[in-house]
Length: 303
Image 1: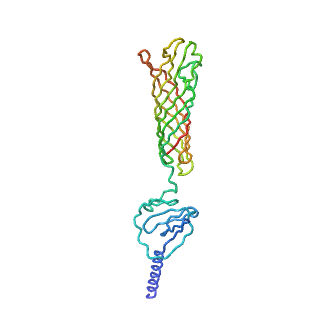
Image 2 (image 1 turned 90 degrees about the vertical axis):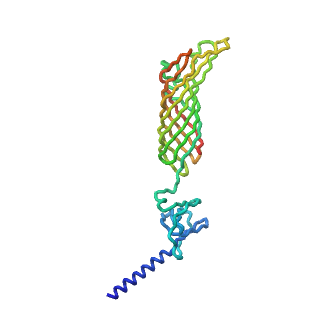
Image 3 (image 1 turned 120 degrees about the vertical axis):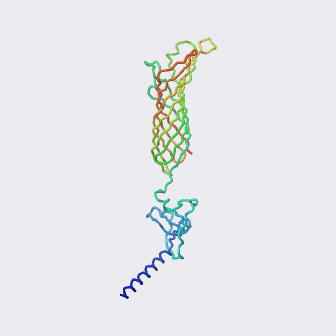
């Protein structure tokens, strides 16, 4: 019986000795840039990353391509890790306040939120592009290619929000069949202000290119064309077609690509049907719904 007790005591002493030796062992990571990190390796993914916790409680992650070699040393016992203090990150290195903070984190922080300034062309589509005088003019816009400019804010993440404002102008394709009277015709085309918002779905890489698609909805504030006519031999012009203003719901969708951190290309399809109010001889009148549909193709600068 005493022999069994002695064996048990001997085994316990050996176990405690081995445990103490392990507790006094430090992992050492030698980096190719000359840095030496001492602590305890928490995780190592072959050919990918290594995660090490230092004695002061900080956790660092390095790419294996940055590691020269890994070794161990026997040293005085390592004190219990203290709460980590956030340290400025270096190239290839990230710190966390605790191991729990590391869980679920990827090696990429994502592209983040972007503020975008853009400009491009406004291409009329459908009835908005059809000329007057080609049958029933109701709802036709006789609009030509124009220009657009705007600002946009997009949140980070693969799913996020997009908010933007846009101003566009489209020239008027004034038909020559309307110029039967001798004189001078002058006109101003369509103009539109858009306030849009939507939910984006796309990629969110920290480096390289990203893209997203987004359904959009908002409001269109538009101004209809104005045409003035000055009869031959006269010095005073008359309003042949007064300009009107209209507001309506606008909807559509966007496809946008971000190259690197700062260059973006986008295409947006927008449709709306406002009624334009005009004042003629002191009397207000309202037009039939006007089909306004265009494609905005833009080049932008993101921050």
